[in-house]
Length: 260
DNA sequence: ATGGTCGCCATGCGA
Image (tube, rainbow, N blue to C red; front, top):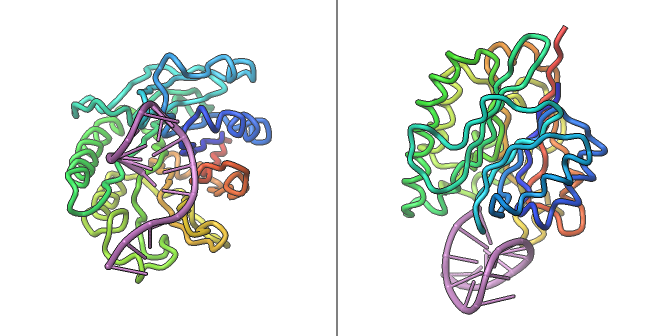
């Protein structure tokens, strides 16, 4: 079973690239973030024609998340039930596996903008609510995966130049503590389960030739519960689509699960 | 020290 997360930065613009990628990489569940389109403009037919099901939570201009899947999702949930929020950032559904139901959560976590911003306060509140909800969700679903754009680089090795980046949004101690609190629930950073060779980054700024210089950050993650950790055989970052014409600024990240 | 690039949609704003 393959689970992928990809922040596409506008599904309108990126739909052809997403379809091309899915053709070459037929995963079981693809979590998309930053759709930037209202629900009524979601391109359901395009995914259906490829044999996929879809659930989505969109809004005009900003945010928006979707789950594209081989099997239809059950018990679909939009948003954090414990945090009133007009921004569409979270979508969860349950999918079958040989071990039983797997809960997959697609998350577009707030960016925070800057340490002084109200958006930063909102980010930390949002993560606190996510933590509290995940604690309950893990009791209900022992096989749980939460994938998405966390807008947090968990450690200095996830930042191209930690000294230059300094203490700023995406790396600040309170944000990293929020990420560690999720791991303390019994979740595991799939990428760090394996000896990795090559660059760890999943996002590169559009400006200053950041991708060419590999001046990136690792902010897109797949977190797995204990039961899924024991099934995980790989976690891969696909840099290829970032080299496309009109690319998203994020790369897709795939966790592979093997059920015996 | 400043602004660089995208995508939204028409103007600055968010990332």
